[in-house]
Every structure is written in C-alpha cells, then in structure tokens.
Amino acid sequence: VDELDQFYARGAHRLALAARDRELLPQLEGFLSAVEAGVEALVREALSGSGASETAIRLVIVMMSFSVWSQLRKLDLPPEEIAALRLGLLECSLRTVRGG
Image (cartoon, rainbow, N blue to C red; front, side, top):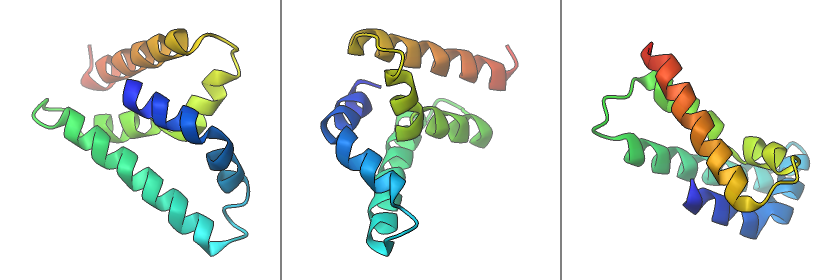
C-alpha cells in the first residue's frame, strides 16, 4: 500500500491525464498497461505463498488501482489516513473472498 501510494502521489497528475486520454493515443494505452502490469506483478508477489485465490488476487489488484486511489483522495484526508483506509478495505475484501 505504501509503495503504490507513493508512486501514485508522485505521478498523480500525469496518470490522471493519461487515463483521461487513454483511448485517444495508443502510446498512453501502452504506458497505462505497463503501469497496470506493474501493479499486478507487485500484488501477485506480495500475495505469493499466502494461499490467496485467483479471485482474491484480482480483487486486490482492483483495490490497488490508480482509479481507486484517486477516488479515495477525493475524501480530502491526510495520506496516512487514506493508506489506513486502503489497508482496511483490502483486509475486509480478502476476508470476504475467503469466506470469513
């Protein structure tokens, strides 16, 4: 959570502009696909050996996306509170997928 929050904070403006114009420029599609692949790789590595199902892994990938991060920033909370919220959402999501 901390690593991605820092990455998103550093590139928020550029990532938001790229996401907005993604369908207009093929280069932006390639750039954002690479970012998304990096997030997926980070999540898969973080959850390796945890026994998480593919559904759980895909859910965490969604929860760690730039779009979710940017929506949470609209809550106008300090970055550490947003990180705590994201961590709580992740834990709750994983418990739900695991059935308990």
